[in-house]
Length: 474
Image (cartoon, rainbow, N blue to C red; front, top):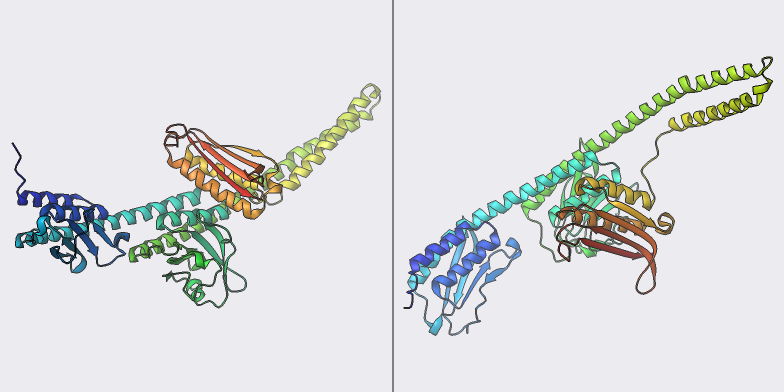
């Protein structure tokens, strides 16, 4: 016995339920289109958006056959979200070229009314999710800056986190130059990093007045905007330039360009990114103050140790030496004269070494490592907290002498990305980092190779870990 088709009212209720329970905007739109097709039996249903930017979509349609426009029945029903025209349902074609009925239109209008409510809810949900992501990102940056060392690392942390949150092609930090322009001092970009660090906005550029004044600048297309003068602007489209300002002081500017043809930033994204930049600037100031206090504590500790060495150790060693010398001069000391002489020489040598140590302690501590080896070790040490395990690091060849700074910067960006990916994989208990030079390419060219291996789940061979290899010519 053939089952009777479900009454249209039942199908309408099912469609309303599907549309009303979805939270993701794309899912809501898909349920609207599927529900309209199910209710009317139309061959083709399209939801055409009034604003093509909404959700990055222009329309959603069923995969049905293209109807013949001149003969296919057509039904159009608008969808409003509050007082805003969101889009239009367009239905074409029915079996046997039957026309759409008044009942079809009434059912669709009910569906469209619920669709408007659900789309509004989906927007609110996405707005809440975006705010939550940016708030969590700002908190993560603050935590990282207050627990890690090095101003260069701090700027990179801000640029990288902002790039990920904004869905940007690059995250860069600019500092004012002595000539009155601005230069990119830090960049986080996986797409095309060459030539970005060091790029400058020339003095007199119209955008500088706003940027140096601490005002955010929003650009629709970096490649064509006459205010942009950097030689890398042709790579990018929509962009934001946000002041890193705290305590009335401009620390720098955070720029977040998307690739050419990318989706423009929404008003909400601009607001959230501006708030993130303010929070990051405050965190940078606090981190710098913390490092200053730590340096002061180190200086005070070194001074105390130097005083103790001078007041206690050196004086006692000198007094002991004087006692031994006087013993040498006593009658009957010939049997032990050589031993006493060697002891005096040792004490004198020890006094000289201790005094050298005192002078060293009185000098300011050395700055952060500048060689590639030291920078790699610092990067792996910083990642240990996120990974839950300290990476094992190996070097092959004269990496400090053979690898130029421009290649070293790119290697560190690749290492940072690989360690971040490893920290996101479950079950990581071992991470090995290897840097070797020279490392030949298949074509026989000399270069430097970075290899990062972890044993986390979800690798290419499921459970057998992941290996990331990066190579660049020298």
